[in-house]
Length: 482
Image 1 (tube, rainbow, N blue to C red):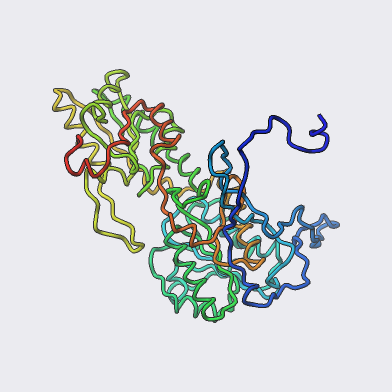
Image 2: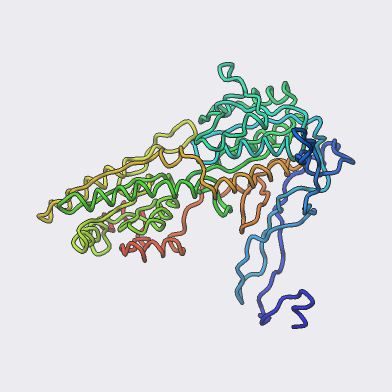
């Protein structure tokens, strides 16, 4: 009771469990190389409306409830057990700082979206723009770069003039008002645009490849003495940027995939004999969408992901499992990630403009082998194949992702206004953090752990055999049943 009264932790103190060395992932600050332009300017929210009288409204300013101090951090390893290392890395906590590096009166910014579409892109563009004008009251321009990196220099796609008013309702629409594309990275032309428009802050929304480009822009600006803060906002529908709790748009995509899974169940249960519905979902190198959509549905009998080899026949084969499920309940539902089955179909040598491998048609392949397997057993399967593909990424963000996008956009702006650069922003252990881009992309794209809890839950829900112990090498060499 005394400890509780003094605001101290209560409970049983564990011996041998604690936090030893904490190693902060530092983010570069412009103040190390350039004088601060925001000296003496108090960081308070710039443009809130008061009630006023009649139709008149005046702008008032309000102090933040909390300003983040230097070296305030979020621990990466929050799990502790006796006998385990008590050292941990830590991330810089995101949020408004007391000291501004930039004078809002002189700030011009640019926002660019690159790579594939994802729910929430418009939300992030909106929140970055609104944070610049409403929280910091910048008096410069915000340029919306059209069509990815190429939009910095392509005369066919001039930049948009983004204002708080022009982005007011864009979060209700899917896609991105800026358009997007792959490739087109030309560092000299990008820097020419930055100099000609007197850009002091650049916000780059994209995946790990786009982030590598953003860091190249940061490095080049530093080399050329350009006083520019570069911030990345991770975007990947596959949820495969490492260290983050999740990427924006992921939850919306999992939710959107439910309609395809429900349709597959209806088709499978109503089409006789032996109905089987197959749904192919996005996931080039990771099975997060397929796994979470399967768990969120509860109707899936087989989930196939890139991280776990597909074994077709034999004691751990997925085909005998499917036949058993069909015989038990009359139908079955399969969810397969687009990147699954490389050990069956081989790895492609072709790539797209971003360097991503072109994927073999695993969905069509599974439909073929299921049909053939039932036929070889003297039976017949009625297989329906559904590929929602881009439908799950082109929808507007749901409420959960809308909130997350607001946090990402605002905290990216908080970071750049404080003079941080070469960083990305994201949710780590349920707290908003600033992470150095080189560390973020070094281990991306990440994969789902086939020995982790999520895969364990898949096995419990689908009752499918576990083939994680089969190595792809052994399958290619014929030491396992394909």
